Image (cartoon, rainbow, N blue to C red):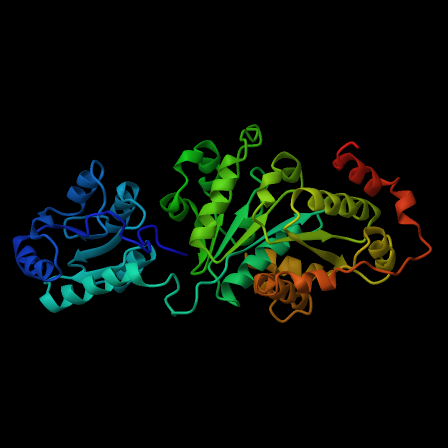
Length: 431
C-alpha cells in the first residue's frame, strides 16, 4: 500500500523544510541542505509540534524533516502530522530513541526514514538523496513496469452463496501469492463480514467516506483503511442498523478512483441490491465475479444479473462461479443450469463445511486457513484468471464462458416464467 506522504512528483511545492529541536543538529543539517541546493532558512528551530502548527496554515514541502525528540508519543504525533500534511510529502523523522520496534512502526505509518541523533553529514546526505529519488522512481520499487490496475466486483446471486467468503479469499490471494497491493472494499455497510473474516475491527472508514465524500483523497485512504497485511487493506463499516444508507454513490466512485491510484488490485464485495441503486459502481470494473449455486432461484437471478450487466456494464467480463457444489444434492443439474443461463459455469467450488468452520475459528480467510484443501484449488485459479484479464483482454473469460449446447430435457426457462426474456425486454428501448 502506498504511503499517504509519498507521491511520484514534486509539483510546485517547496523542495524541503525541517523542524529540529536543538542547535547542534541544525548546525550539521544546514551545510548539507545548502549542498543539496536548498535554502538553509527552511531549517526551523522546533520539533514535531512546531511542524504541525506550521503546516496547518502553510503548504507542505516535498521533503519534510521532523524531530521527535520532545514527543512523548511519537506514533500518535505522526498521525497528527498526517492530518495536516498534504499527500505527496516524503517525511524523514529524527530522534534519540534507539528502538527497533519504534523504527518499524514509524516506517509502517508512512515515514520514509528514521535517523538517530547525533546526526552526521553523511547520514543526512544519504537519507535526503534517497528521499529525493522517490519523486523520480517508478511506483514499484522492484523497477518493473507499472502494473495495470485490475478491479473485480464479487456479487452473490442469492444471500448465503458465499460471495463474501470468496471476496476475502481473492483479496488475500492477490496480496500474498500474487504480491499485488490490494484494496478490499466491503459495501455491505450494515452487515458486511469482510473485516470479520480477516479478524479485524471494521473501523469508521467507510462510514466517514459516505458522510464526507469531499474528504476522500490519498491521505484519507491511508488513514481510513485497516491493514490486514503488508499488501492488503480493507475499507468497511458496521453501521447501526437503525441508520439507513444515505448517499448518492459519489463516495463510492471517488473511493474506486483513489484505489486505482494507490493499489494494483481492487476487490469490491458488492451486495446485489447495490447494482440497482448504484449501477455506475461497475463502470471501471474489469471482472464481475458472479457467485451462484445450483438452485432454481439462483438460475433465475443469474439470468437477470447477466442481462443487467450486458446493458449497464458492457466492458466488464462476467465470471460465473458455482459455489458449495455437492454431488447428488443439487436442486438442478449443472447441465440444466448452464442451458438456462446460456453459458458455461467458469469455476466450481466444492462444499466444505469443515474448512469453513476452520477459517472462522482461526480468524483467517478461507484460503489462508485451508491452504492444503482441494476446495482452495479453484479459488486460486479464479484469482489467476482475474489477474490475467488485462493481459489477454478478457479472451480467457470469453472462451470459458461460451454458450452451452447442453440443452437438457428439464426446461428451466419455462419454470422461471420467462425471467430472462422479461428483463431483456424491460432494458431495451421502445421501438
